[in-house]
Amino acid sequence: MRPTLRQLQYIVAVAESGRFRDAAFQLGVSQPSLSEQISDAEAQLGVTLIERARTGAVLTPAGAEVVRRARIVLTQVEDLKTVARQVAGDLAGRYRLGTLPTIGPYLLPSAVRELHQLYPDLRLGVREERTIDLDEKLNDGRLDMIISTAEDHLNSESMQLFDEQLYVCTASDDPIGGGDGALKLSALKGREVLSLGYGHRLSTVVQKLAEAAGAHVSTEYEGTSLDAIRQMAGMGAGIAIVPSLYAVMEASKDPDQIVRPIDHPLARRQISLVWRSGSPLEQNIQKLGLVFRDVAADLLPQAGKSVKGKT
Image 1: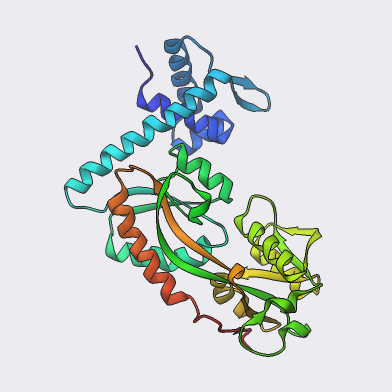
Image 2: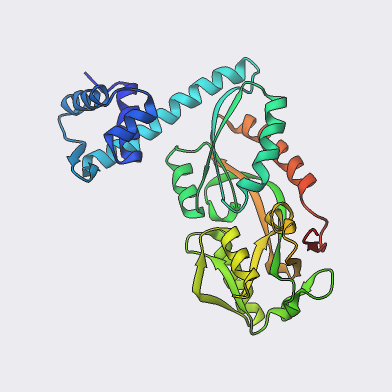
C-alpha cells in the first residue's frame, strides 16, 4: 500500500492552508473525508505527518519532508498532462504563474484578456508574492513560472520581457516635481525616500539608488504596497520611488501628484519570465512570454517621459 495522488494533494493542501477545514473547503470535499484520507496515508507510511493542534495543523519533521516530495510528485503529474497536450498541439489547461506585486496588477489584466482570445482553453492561476517567496515556490513546484528579476533566481531559465525604469512620485507642490523630462539622481540628495518592506526586490534597488544619490530610505515608514507609499508621498512624508508600469497605470490618475523618471543606470531593472531548468512546459511558457512582452510594450511609456496627473 502507498499514498494515492489524491491523498498527497490533501496533505499538501493542509500544509499550505494550516487548517483541515480550510483545506477541505478549497478542495471541495468534506472535512471528515479529508481527515480520513490523510489518516490512511499516515497509516500506510507508518508515521504521523500532521499534528492536530487547537491552533491548527502543524507538520511534523517527517510531514514537512513528505510535503516537499509530494509537491514534486504532483508537479510532475501536471507536467505529464501538459506534455500530452503539447503533443496534441494545444496550449490549454491550468498554468500556475507567480508575479511580483509591483508588476502583476498592472500587467496581467491586459495580458490575460489577450491570452484568453489567443488560447481560450488556457487557465492561468496567479499568485502575487515577494521575490524570496517566488523563488521558493518555483523551485519546489508550487509555481510553473514567475514574472520577476532573473538575477534573483539562479539555476533557472528565463526570457526578458521588458526593461522597467523607476520613477519618483511626489506631491505636486514638491520642488522636485518642477520641470519636465527625466530627473537627475542628484536631485534626490538629502531627501527621504519611501520604499516597500523587506523581501521585495524593489526595496533593494531603492536602497542602492538612495545610497548613490546621498538620500536616505525612511526608517519611520515601510510600505506594504505601492499605493501606500504613493499616498504617503502625497502627504509630504517623503519621495516614493515606483516602477514605470505602476506610474502609467495608477500614479498618473492622481491630479495632485507628479511622476518623473530617474535618469540613472541604477534606476532600471530587467523584468523576465522565469521557469525551472528542464521544465517540459518550456515551449508553452515561451509562447506566454511573447504575449506578456507585447502587452508590456504597449503599456510602457517612452524612455524619459514624465507622467503627469490628469486634471
